Structure formats: C-alpha cells, structure tokens
Image (tube, rainbow over all chains, first blue to last red; front, side):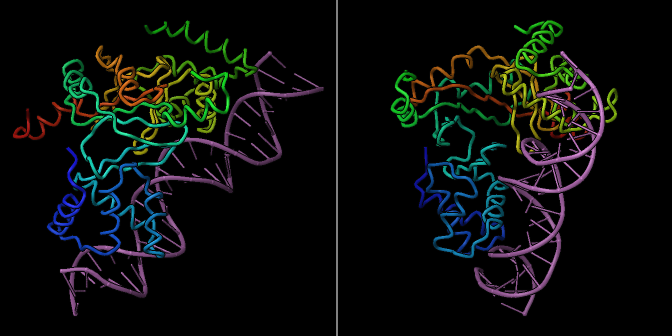
Length: 156
Length: 156
DNA sequence: GTCATTGCAAAGCATTTGCAAGTCG
DNA sequence: CGACTTGCAAATGCTTTGCAATGAC
C-alpha cells in the first residue's frame, strides 16, 4: 500500500526532474519530510522543522514546492479553513481521515465500506464523481483519557 | 426530515430570542434566506441577495448572524479554503454533499451505507467520533453536458 | 432608556505573488 | 552561463474585530 519512503522519494525526484524542475537542497528536504511524515503536517509545521537544517528557508518555498507536488498529483491537500491546510505526501489518493478536535492529530481511517461510497453516490446523484473527502472529527484515545483525568464526572 | 421552512424560521427566531438576541429586520432576512436556501450559499452570495432589500447591509452582519447560528448548532458550515465557506441552514446535522467542481453547485447526497460510517470508524480507530464531513467532488449532469457539447471527443 | 446590533473600516491569517539575488545543471 | 529557485516583502481573499451611531424591546 504505502511505498517505501526512500523509493517514493526517488520517484518524486525523478518526476520533478522530468518536468524540468531543479532539485535544490531545500526542495529535497521538503520532499524527504513529506514522504516520511505520517502526521499530515501543515505548511508551517513543515517550515519549523526545516528551519533546523535551513535557517533561512522561507515559508513561501515550502508552499511553492507543495504547489508543484499538487500539480503533479503527488500530495493530498486536506483543506481546513480554521486549522490551516494539512498535507499527506505518503498517500496522494483520497482516503478517509480521523481528526482529533483537541490536539489536531490526523490519522488514516480505512473503512472497507467507505471505499465504494463514491460509486454509489455517483449513481444516486447523477454526478461524475472524480474525487472525495471523508473526514471524521472526534477525540483521539490520548485526549479522551486526558479529559477523563481532568474531569472524572465527564468520563465515558 | 426537513422541517417546513416557515416552522423552522419560527423555531430559530424563538431560539435566538431565548438567548437574549434581538431580532432585527436584517437578522430576520438572513434567517429567512438560510432556511429557504437549498443551494448551500456562501456568505457573500447571501450578502448580494440581501442587498436588494437592505442596500446598506454589511457583509459583517451576515457573518455575525452566521456565527450566532453556529454557536447554537443551527447551521452547518462547509469549509472550503479555496471556494470560501458554504452554509446549510436547512439541515444543521452533518450529512454527505456532492460538489460540482465546474459550477460550484452543492447538493445533498444521502447514502444509506454512509450513515453508520462514523460508528464503524470509531470502532476501527478508537476515536470518539463527534461529527464528520463527507464530500464528493465531480461534475454535475448540466456541466457534464456542457463539456460534452463543447468538446464531443471527450464525452463519456 | 438600555443594551444589543449595525455598518464601516481596519486588523488577522493562511496562502500567493513579484522581484532581485543566488544557484542548479 | 542561462533559466529556474530562493527569500524577502507586499498583496490577496475571506473572515473577524473595534467602535461610534442606531434601533429593538
């Protein structure tokens, strides 16, 4: 399912090269971060991490590289007008996510019955369904425990 | 399922009054528009329509009223960081939507198998699922025909 | 008469863009 | 070397906020 990050990195580099893009150290670092991150980071989270190695790296450079990958269909953008957008560079095809409303953690949620939902919706609505976005919001186990510890009367 | 708009409007007015809010002509018009709209309008689309009757109405007033309804859980906000947010004042509980990527039309898409998806995802991931967001993107029948007419070689 | 609401303008925030300086190939 | 990239700063677009004037109850 997931490609090995190192192999995926090579593929992305080759793909960008084939499109006439130059592989700068900054870009390589961004790609590396994206293919390794399971946490669906925001552009700013990526930027903060990248500053360690590239103290002058601009947030604009992160956005520009993400734009490149979006055009190539190699990164999945999860738009949130309140949390800011989050990015999945490991699995660029649409898949369900679960988002913790307390800590912002995002994990994949593969439900077999959701897989052919797009097909059914197409039949029901007459639309040509090209892509989808399936998000579930709630409390992750860690945050639920934290809440229970802080306020035992509200525990499940 | 859907309440009759007139009845729903009365409920909303009563609810806001009970919360100490005043029912100004502007607010009433915004509520009326929301409970009647099936098109999931944006704040700006609402504002444009409201300007006919209230030439001085400010966009901020639209947003402030929407905020009020969000706090009361009486409007469903569909966030799109690119299209701008869209609002459903008829059915404030989460439900699947289909969005036309060409014209921006949004329609409801009730799939019976999607209904208990939240429950299954909760079991699979260990999260407490509180709400969800299920969006399908594609071409509505009208836009598909338009496209086919413009470029017959690409027709389905 | 009080206190919430309006409407304007200004502020916020995430993201995008313009451009001169720098650098990959 | 030349074209692409970088990084800064300014611009953008949607939404929110501050505040004096207005108006609901």
